[in-house]
Image (tube, rainbow, N blue to C red):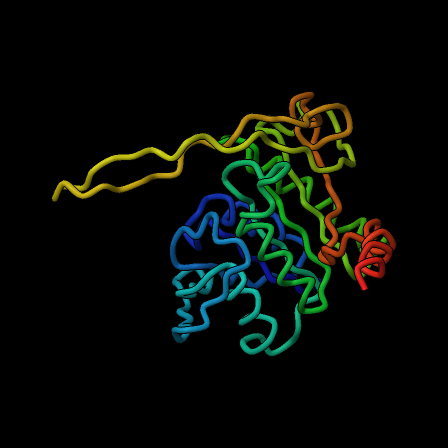
Amino acid sequence: MRILLSNDDGVYAEGIQVMYEHLITRHDVTVIAPDRNCSGASNALSLHSPLRIQKMSNGFYAVNGTPSDCVHLGVNSFLEEDPELVISGINHGPNLGDDVVYSGTVAAATEGRYMGLPAIAVSLTSKTGEHFATAAKVVLDIVEQLRVHPLPANQILNVNVPNVAWENLAGIQVTRQGRRHRAETMVKDQDPFGRDIYWYGPVGDEQDAGQGTDFYAIAQGYCSITPLSVDMTAYQSLDDMKEWLNKTR
């Protein structure tokens, strides 16, 4: 299978290296990733500056753009043959619950789906990152399953894997998104010239982390797979909204 591999941690990140090493044993893989860390970039596109792509000594391609730029460039212009699948990751840290709104990892997968391709976002839920190989093995298995059970046209898979050795993984659970509390207060500081500056504080703790959520699965030692819809229409509200709008006329 022809696979386009990208991420948001940047082309030099350990996670993408490990994912590539596992995928290349079975598939034709091209790596196109940002030339620096773009965590939190979400679905941003570089509309006001040109994109440049540089081939590295290991065969990876580095782009001076966002994760979405990398996937768009790879699918729409750069590759001679369209990939059959987009994989984003392995991210260094979790993308659980509300994280998916801000995640460049998830955004790269979403961009692949917007381009008409099935897509997977994968994250290792630890900042220490000892067991990227576990996440890579999970993805290899998922790719084989997608050959038999293709994804619906409006969905991607958001995969989160606990930071444990393969033999210690409790299993795999299909989950829904949990939800975090509001993020912590921003941290105020000063630059060397005495001017006020602000840093984002820690993410909020889990608010909805009950059984069935991605948070719960990870806490129990399971890999979490959450199908995400790229169509954000709140269909359950359409009829109610039509009704109250009609009353205003």
